Image (cartoon, rainbow, N blue to C red; front, side, top):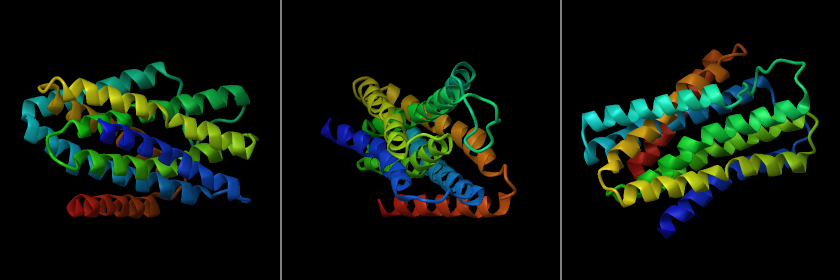
Length: 243
């Protein structure tokens, strides 16, 4: 139990660690570097899903449970996206008032963090040792650039740097709650473990393909973003191999 709390808290706080950079920046970050960061996190999440969560789901259940869980994850994220205000980090339209923009970006990142927290909690309920630590580390790695981009977006909307840092850090707090929820649901009801693992994988794959990859390819940086995605993928595979 203590492991899932520590893992959830550390992965969630990684959002604030990434946002911390904004306090020491004097110049804006180019679209090219933002796209590179987004693609890198997409590669990390892709590897965590396909090399970590999906094999564990198959080991704890079978293809049927995997398929059901993945489709439930994708369906849940689809419904959440349709009912929670969402904007594109890099390509939002001008003319929206600040208060609305702030609420939209906070809602969007909170939406992203729900399956990430669930994946951490469910992974700690897995029977395979160190799976939880691996997924928590992977989520933490992708949370850091995400937190930086959120803080940067808010600063570009004329928000005070320190306030932007606090808001970006708080967007990761939902992962602690959903992490504990995922752990309790699967740790005490054994048959839910493969469904939980595959649900988290499906939700993360939805985010990668629907959000991160398109956002990283919207400013003419497709080639460098592709390279960054591959580097993130290989980096996460290396970590999985080490663990």
